[in-house]
Amino acid sequence: MPLARLIPCLDVAHGRVVKGVNFVGLRDVGDPVELAKFYSDGGADELVFLDITATPEESATMTTVVADVADVLEIPFTVGGGVRSVEDAIRIIESGADRVSLNSAALADPSLISAIARRYGSQAVVVAIDAGDGVVHTHGGRVVTATKTIPWAVEAASRGAGEILLTSISHDGRREGFDLVLTAAVRDAVSVPVIASGGAGSAAHVADALRITDAALIASIVHENPAGLPGLRREIQDLGIQLRPMRELI
Amino acid sequence: MNDVVVVDYGAGNTRSVRAALAHLGATSVVSCDPAVITDVDLVILPGVGSARSAMDHLDSTGAAQALRDRFETGAPILGICLGMQLALEHSDEDGGVDGIGLLSGSVHRMTEGRVPRLGWATVEPWGDAYYFAHSYAAHCPDGVATSEGVTVAVERGSFFGVQFHPEKSGTAGLAFLERCLSPV
Image (cartoon, rainbow over all chains, first blue to last red; front, side, top):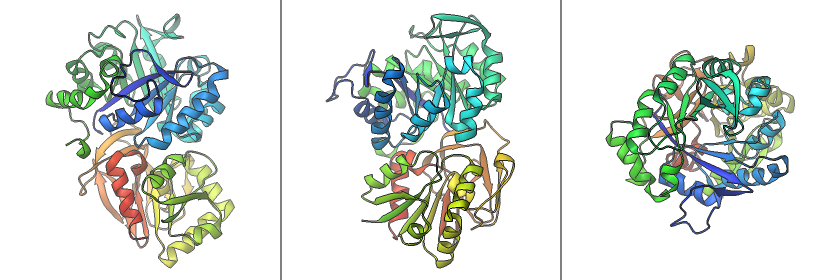
C-alpha cells in the first residue's frame, strides 16, 4: 500500500480561498495559488479545492483558478463542487486538475461516475459522500436523502469511482476526532482507497484515522496555522504513521 | 534551452508536465505531428486518458509510427504512467489494446491492495518516493525499478518509462525530470 496521505482541503468562493484560514505569513490573503504552493512546500501530499459557490456563472472563475494552480503545483490536486456533467469534468481536468470530486450530482445521476471514469480512468474520479445516521446527505448537509451510506459507497466504486471521500456530518467541525467506525465500515465495504474527513483536531486524531484508512482530509487544524503543517506531519510520524519522506524539509 | 515535445493524445491534461518542464527551464510544445516528433531533443508520452482512445489517436495521426522510427534512431523518449504502458506490446485495458510495441511485455490490471493504487510510494533501488495513480501495471523484462513489488520503471535503448508522475512528485519528481533533460 502507498504511504498514508495528508490532504488539506481549501474552500473556494469567487476565485478566493474562504472560511477559517489564518493568513498570517501569506502575502496575498486568500489567493488559492499562493496558499496551494505554501501547503505543497509544507508537506501536503495532495490538495482538494472545493468550489463552495459552484454556480454555473462561477465555473469560468474556477477554471482559471485550476489552471493557475496547475502551473505552480507539483503535487496532485482534486477539484470538487460544481461538477455536474462530463463537460464540467473535462473542463476541470483539461485545465490541469488531476481528479474531480462528485457529490450530489453523482447521487442524482450515478452514470456520471462511469462516464468520467471511461474517459480519464477511475483514478480521476472521487465520489464524496457526506454521511450521517447511516444515510447520505447532500447540498452541504442540508438535504437528508434515503440513500444508505454503505450501499452507495459500494455502488459508486462499482461504477468507477477511484476513491471515496467520506465525511461524517456528526463529526465534521467538532475537532474531536474522525468517525473511525464509519470510516472502517466503508473501507471494509469497498476495494478502492477511502479518505477520512471531518473531525481532525490534533495530530493524534489524524494518526488514528491513518491507522485504519489510506488518507485524511484536514481543514481547520491546518488553516488556523498554515506554517504549522511540517510540525503536524512530524507529530503524526512520531505517532508511528509513515508519511512520504521529504528531503526538502530536512 | 531544451526542445521537448509532449505528445498530445487528443484528450487530457498535458498542462502539469509542461509546467514542470518550464520550471526546469525547458521549452516544450504539445503536438502529435510526426514531423515534430522526429525533429526534437526529447519526446514525452504523458499519462492521460484511456489506453484505447490514446492508441486510436496515436495510430490515426501517424504519431505511433513516428515514435517507432524515433526509437530506431536512438533518440530519447520518456513515457509517463499510461505513456509508459503504451510503449509495451499490449494492454488489457479497455478490453485489450495493442500498444506501440517499443518494448516487449504487457499491461495487466492490478489485483493486490486497493485499486487504483493512489499515493506516494518509495521506488527501489532509487530510494525516493513518487506519486502514483494507476489501476494497471507493466509486466516487462526491461524493468529497472520497482515499488511494492510493481514494476515502475522500464528502460530499453533510448526509451525510459516510469509508472509514477514525476510532474506531480514534488522535488523528487523535478529532480527526476531534470536527469531526463540533462543528456539532451
